[in-house]
Image (cartoon, rainbow, N blue to C red; front, side, top):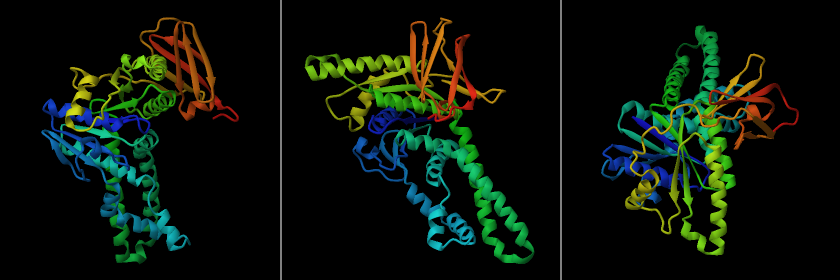
Length: 393
C-alpha cells in the first residue's frame, strides 16, 4: 500500500502532476485511486470527465474522487455538533452563537484525512495519490491529527466530570452524552491510527510541486520545514513548467529562461539531498489520460512513480537540555568544515566552502538567534539559543 501526497502553492500544477502519477501507476497494473482534498476541485477538469464524492473509474485500474467534506460532515457529525452546542448553551451563550462555536476545530480536515486512512486500512486500492489543497491549507490538514486529539482529550475529560457529577440524578438523560462520548473516543482512536499511517515512510510519501519562481520556491521550503517538524517523510520535489531551450529565441522568453536557470540552481542547492523531477512547459494543455501519461513519462522516465525515492529525514529540530533548539540537516556531499551562518527573520543563509543554501525556518526557530553551526559526519548542526528574540518574526 502506498499513499503519495502532492502539495505546493496554488497554481503550480499539483492536480496535473498527481493525476499523471496516478495514470502511470494504473498503466503499470496497480489498482490506483487519485483523490482531491482541495475545496476548489479541478481533478475532473484534468481528466475531462465528471467526478463525484465517491470513486469513479476513469481508465483501466484507475479511479478518481473529489472528496466532499461538506457532505460527510452533514451525514456523520450532526450528533456530535448538537451535543457540543448544548454544552456551550449551558455556559450562558445564546443558541445562534453556540451553533457557530460548536464545530470542533479542524473537523473538515479530519474528515478528509479519514478518507485517506479508510483506503489505507481497507486496502481497496494498492496506491492512493492525493491532490492536496494549496500549501497553507495542506499543512493545517496534516497537523490536524495532533491538534484534534488535543481538543478531543479536553472535551473527553470535561464530559467525564459532568457524567460523574450528574450520574445519581440524570438516569436516562445520560444516554445522549454517553453515545457522543463513545463516538468521540472512536474518532480519537481513528485519528491516532491515521497519524501513524501518515508518518510511516514505507506507506506515505510527500512531494512538493513547484515552479522555478522565487515566491513558489520559498513556500515550498516552508512546506518541507513543517513536514519535517511533524515527521512526515518527503521523498522528492517536482519542478513543473520548465521552459525548453528553444524558448530562448525571443527576447521575452530568453529573459524568462535565464531567470528560470538561476532559480533551478537555487532549487538544486536548497532542496538537497531530495531527488528532483523535471516537467517541461508544454505548448498544449495537459488534459485527458493520454496527455497525462505523456507528462508522467517526461517526468519520471522509466521509474515507477510510486517508488520511495528518498529515505531519511530532510531536517530535524530537537530541543536541547538548556531549553534551546538544534537544527540538523543531512549534507552528505559537503566536506568543508568552515561553516558560515547568517539569519534574517525566518531566513537562514548557510555557506560551507563553495556550497550555499538559503532556507526558511519554522516559527520555533525563526524567533531565536542562531549561535553556532558545525558539520559532523555529513550532518550540519545549527544551534539556536533558548531565549526568544524580542520583536522576532
